[in-house]
Length: 137
Image (cartoon, rainbow, N blue to C red):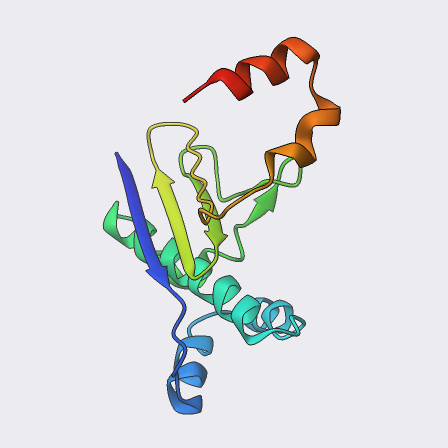
């Protein structure tokens, strides 16, 4: 089973609501969140953890208080809880997503769609690769 959850930044969150959300995580997580300078980054970090807790709850793991105590990191610094639960958190722009699985490894990624200058990538491509890009619709 895979559970996918998402939310977006809240631009008009009052201090009381922020503190209430922040109080749902451990002191270690609070400390990490509070190191971020931008409020958007603090929200992304907090909301990612809250989505993880909700995702775990939806797949039958009511371990809210124990999640961060059981959080470990593999050799690539990818966080995991244990061998039977996998999750991945991503954010871009105003959106935060979390995928939680009990069926094996899971990954999720989002990216805000924005205009890019293709010419900026030309020097990294072979002439044939650049030609294919330029001839594509």
